[in-house]
Image (cartoon, rainbow, N blue to C red; front, side, top):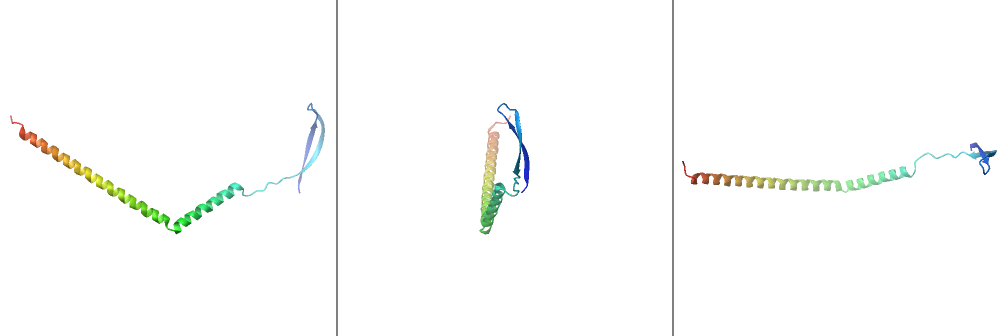
Length: 111
C-alpha cells in the first residue's frame, strides 16, 4: 500500500517551534462510482417505467383518452347549443324592435 510522508511541527504553549517529526500515513484512495444519489435516481427511473408499463398494459391510457374525448364532445355540444340560443334571442329581440319601430311610424301623424 502506498504511504505519504508528512512532517509535523511540534510547538510549545507560546507557539514557538520546538521540533519536527516525520510521520508516514497510508494513502486513502476514495472509491469512484455510483453513490446513493445515482442509486436513488436509477430506482426512481425503474419505478416510473414499471408504473407506465402497467398502466399501458391495462389500457388506462386508452380509457383516459376516451374519457377526455367524450368530455370534449360534451363541452362542444353545450357551447354550440348556447351559441344557437344566443343567436335566436338576438333574432327575436331584433324582430321585436323592428315591429315596435314600424308600429311607432304608423301611429305618428304625417306632416
